[in-house]
Image (cartoon, rainbow, N blue to C red; front, side, top):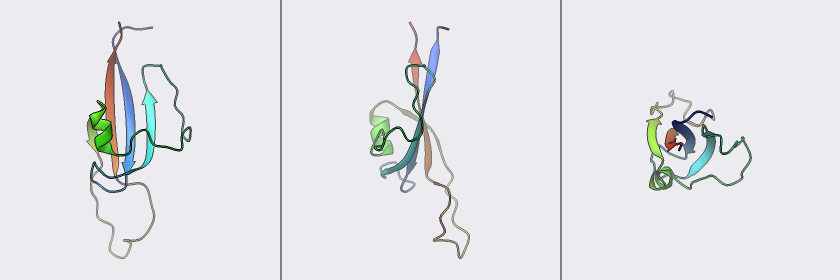
Length: 93
């Protein structure tokens, strides 16, 4: 196994654009190889809010753009639009 820095990625979908909003969907990717999480392997999110992930050492590196709905489509359902990407870097050795 290669020595060096490995990345873990956490994607949280929040109820609103605020980082303290409740998590409504999530994905976890572990580049360290320590775990192999899969979609639907938990009924509970890894964190209640985006702020809770920050408090646990995850670094926020991307948040989705806030795009207003097209007039007349304010109540349509679609993709989860409040998407936040977090990372943790782990050093081997």
